[in-house]
Structure formats: C-alpha cells, structure tokens
Length: 281
Ligand SMILES: Nc1ncnc2c1ncn2[C@@H]1O[C@H](COP(=O)(O)OP(=O)(O)OP(=O)(O)O)[C@@H](O)[C@H]1O
Ligand SMILES: [Mg+2]
Image 1 (cartoon, protein in one colour):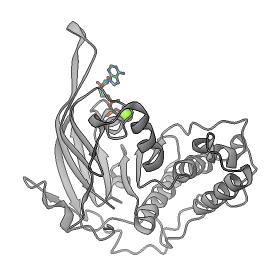
Image 2: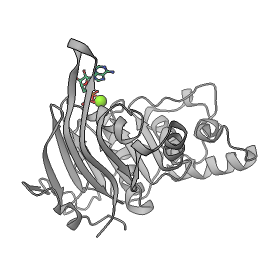
Image 3: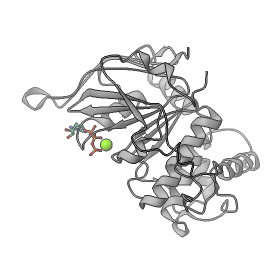
C-alpha cells in the first residue's frame, strides 16, 4: 500500500471577521497517496483554490491538520514552511505568471535566484527541464514571443526546476484553447506516470478530470463525492511530449479513452489505493 503523501484532517476555513465571517471549507478530510493523480472539480466559488492554497502552505489560517509526507505544517515556522514548499512543491496557476523581460531559461530559474550555483549550471538545468516539457530550442526566447501553451510549459518547467515531489495545478488550462489544454493535461499525466510526481489538478472541465486516478467533487466547501477512475484516459497516443501543441487523437487507444470509464464509489473513501494503475510507491 502506498503511504500518504498528503493528509488533510478536518479542515475548516473561514474568511473575514465579525459579522462578515464566512465559512468556505467544512470539515474537509482527504488522504492522497504518493504517486496519485487526483482531480478536484466543482463549481466556481466551491472552495477549490482555497483548499489548494492550504495544501500548498500558502494559507496558514485554517482549522484542522495538514500533513505533507508526515510533516505537520502547524509545527513549522515560516522559514521551514518556505523551504518545504521550495524543495517539494511545484505550483501551476491559470495565469502563467512569467516575466517578459527575462528569457525562458531565466524564468525557469526564478526559484533558484538565491541559489549559489553558477549561472551556467542554472542555465544547463533550466535547459534540461525545458527539454522535458517539450521546449528545447526555446531556452533564449522571451515569453512574449511564445504561444499560450508554450508559456504554460515554461511555467511547468519552472515548477519542475527543483525536482518537486508534489505539483499543485489550479485551472492550468483555463487560458488555453481546448486542444492546447489537452496537451498540457497530458504532460501532467506523463509527469505523474513517468516521474512519479504526486499531482493535484483543479479543473472545471469534466473531460480533463478523467485523466486522474481519482476525482473529488467539492460543493459548497464540502467533499460531495469521490470517484475511483479505473481507466484514466490519455489525451494523446504517443506518450511523448512535444511543444507543437497538437493533439494526436487519431491513434489514441480507444479502450483507454473509453467514455464513462470512471467507476463511482460511495461511502468508502478509504479504498482509493487499490485502483491506481499509474501510481508509484
Ligand atoms: N480572499 C478572500 N476573502 C474573502 N472570501 C474569499 C477569498 N477568497 C475566496 N473567497 C470566497 O471563498 C469561497 C471559495 O473561493 P475559491 O476561490 O476557493 O473558489 P473556487 O472553487 O476556486 O472558484 P473558481 O472555480 O471560480 O476559481 C468563495 O465564496 C469566495 O468568494
Ligand atoms: Mg479557483
């Protein structure tokens, strides 16, 4: 059995104070084993980003317990939490948050700006991760000259720079056309499958959520349902990653892309570790 990578226990979250105090997360408990690809879906305002920010240690103002690889956020000071985040967690957001006056490789290196390594070593590693996301040849380009999908790949390369064990992705395809979005989601699936990165993907799009091993639905700040997905779909056939932002649907494996492959489970939130074909230990 996989050990848990992330464990949320009884999370409550409030915004505001006094009469304006509003509860937005209600007793959320969730165990995410190492190597899982988990989708979180839910309507706008249901609490997805709030939950992701708590998981990522960006928001410390909550009730309940967050354990990341058995480390309790509550026992860490700000510097320890920042180090854990920097070394273990990659964030990807809907807005790419790139700096246009820097080159692609410099954007990728941002997390290492305070690192003492020599520039050439930084550039070399940045080039490696740019290759990994299908952007070889774009090392010295400026983000403003790239497509939306390519910009999101730079943001992914930046998140990969420090070899995270966890990636938290908040609507990463929200600014992309649907074909490009599918390619980006497939890239996440490959990073989960081949690199063993535990990945949480927040998405509005039902079809994209089907790449996950498990799909959790949030409604009004509560976990409303969970599905084990016995056949996570592939969104392109080759499994190889390129930067062309084209989706090869023609050769897709029809079995793996079978619609309605998700098997609903009810009432048993503990059985999720049994049906994860792509999970790592
Ligand atoms: N900084 C804040 N101050 C006060 N209320 C907030 C704040 N951030 C979010 N909220 C409220 O918390 C609730 C959950 O917001 P959250 O951003 O987590 O939703 P979401 O599911 O990510 O929505 P979306 O799909 O639109 O991104 C909403 O009612 C929102 O208005
Ligand atoms: Mg959100």
